[in-house]
Image (cartoon, rainbow, N blue to C red; front, side):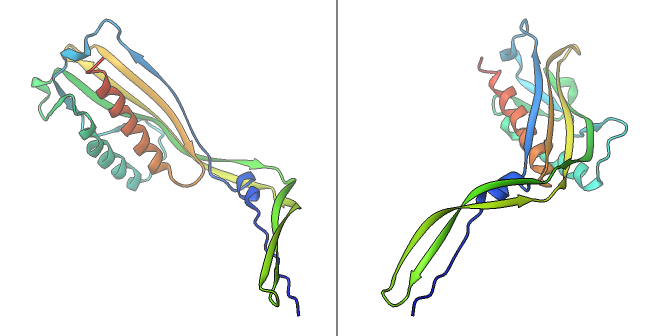
Length: 196
């Protein structure tokens, strides 16, 4: 007796309506007249400041502060000091915006590829066949977490010598990963300036 098992793998469905999206954009300004190699000691403000109106849970504020301080170890080309008076430069982070929103994605009909597996138990053989499958994604809301952060570096005279602004959002409830990546990238990129 021959039994046919049919398995469908609909990978495309996951990519159309229910996938996670992460987007980052921003600007970087650097004082081209400043010699970044002259910086030896850096003071990092241990607190991240927040603009009025930021809708941020207390847990995220604590997490952000921990990451902000932990990731500072990436500044290997500078000595981090705990007194502002002896520093050559000062680093601060300021959250400009932090909020959640959503948008509607309309229903979608599409065709994707599936695999049909045929098993012949008598002959102990099987084969697969690729087939087209009509698929459908219901209309749904996509929920998104957003933030904008500004990193500012000033010299010991109070002049801004480096500034980076980043805007990021994520639809997969991993905004903490986005802030971590943003902070890590800032420290790594600024660290490179000591070699340029």
